[in-house]
Image 1 (cartoon, rainbow, N blue to C red):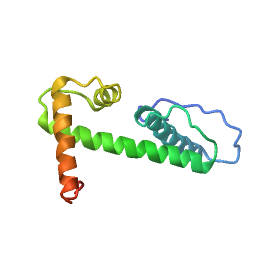
Image 2 (image 1 turned 120 degrees about the horizontal axis):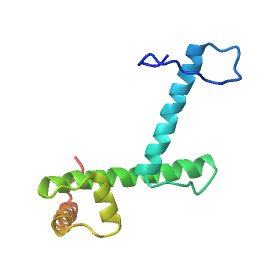
Image 3 (image 1 turned 90 degrees about the vertical axis):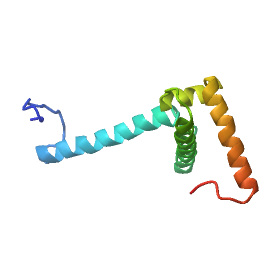
Image 4 (image 1 turned 90 degrees about the horizontal axis):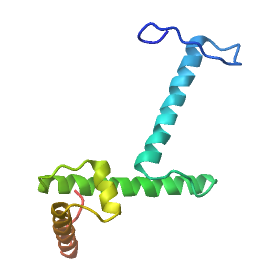
Length: 126
């Protein structure tokens, strides 16, 4: 039964496994499916370019780095801009270079400030 008391029926060929264990296996699989859905949606990796373990990890690692940098940039720009823009909208506009003018100005100021800090030897992160 699920949380609302509805009976759930699952077809399986695992006859020597308890119903609780099968439910646990489905729960774990759902977590994996949700993770891959998040990866496809947020890391913009609808397909993998290689089949080897190294190729998959490399592509996911690059996607995670891009996500973290975009999220970090968005969080800093959001403090300076009064207009509301969701993170997904920001990513789409950033990648297609169609950010609203107030976001463009805040972005330019933010990146110039980072460049100045780096040239003075001041750490950018932290």
